[in-house]
Amino acid sequence: MLIYLAMLDDPSLEDEFRRFFHRYSAPALRLARRYLDPDLAQDAVQEAFIAAARHFTVLMDHTEGQRRSYLFIAVRSRAIDLLRWQGRYAGLEEEALPGGLTGEQAAAAAAGYDALVEVILSMPPTYREVLERRLILEETPEEVAAAMGLSRAAVNARFARGRKLLREKLLEEGIAP
Figure 1 (cartoon, rainbow, N blue to C red):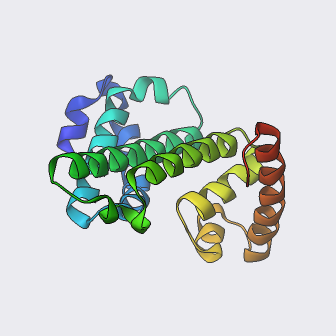
Figure 2: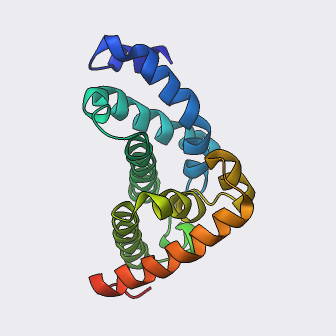
């Protein structure tokens, strides 16, 4: 934690950053572990929190959901960078990429994922958080319900409506769902 506090662009925001860190460190690590082994996942999360600390004054101008999204996108970007670094410098074969994808397929998948994240972030908050938690963080409906203070039925309804809206937005953007 001390490294992050030392990186803060405004030391007066220390308490707010501590709350941010304690609220999102576990979900960020869970997200990084989807892509990386545990040691590299820790590195990706650390780099993302350092980036957040360096820009925390700007992040404070945004909503809690936008700050969370920034962190999760930063974690995912760091994870992809680490995978690329591993493949380039550790001599990993293309078959070693997640899902057995070739380098070209992985790049196309990453671009599609980035487009999906952008569309999700542009959605109304009612659906955005549920979609983000279910599709990006891969939380269960029960976990989403507990985190958002909703019933499981409400989460499922928002998820279904959000997926329908997401499908429509993807088609408008020319992205095949």
